[in-house]
Image (tube, rainbow, N blue to C red; front, side):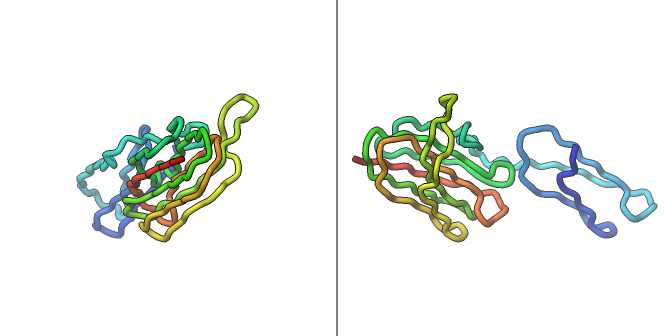
Length: 175
C-alpha cells in the first residue's frame, strides 16, 4: 500500500518512527541506506495503546447514541492522528439548560455543538452548527446554553496540535 512514514538518519545513527496508527495490518521495510557496506541491525516494535476503548463514533452517522439526556453523563475517550473526530448524539425531551465540559487533555482538542437533522432515510445527520469552543492548548473547553427539545450532536476533535490526547467529556441537561 501507500508509504505512511519514513526515517533516513545519516550514517549509523538510529532510525525511528513514532506515530498513531489505527487498527490494520502494516509492513515495515528495512533497506540499505547510502552506504554499500553490509550492516547488522536490531528492529523493535512497541505499541502504546491509550488504555481507553474508543466509544464515540468517528462520523456523525456512527455517533455514540447517548439517548435522552437528563442530568449528567460522563465519558472518557481520545482524539489524535488515527481518530481525529468523536461524535456523540443525544436527545432533549424539553427545554433544558445544557452544559458541555471538555477537560483533562494533555494536548489541544476542541468542541462543537450541532442540531441534528433526520434525512429521508430516517438517519440522523449534522444540521447547523450551534456553537463551538476552541480554547488554546490543553485548556478546558465548554459550552453553556438553553436548548429546546430535539436531537443534537457534540463533536470533539483534534485541535491545533497534531499529538494524541485523552479527554473527559461531561454532558449536563437540567430543567
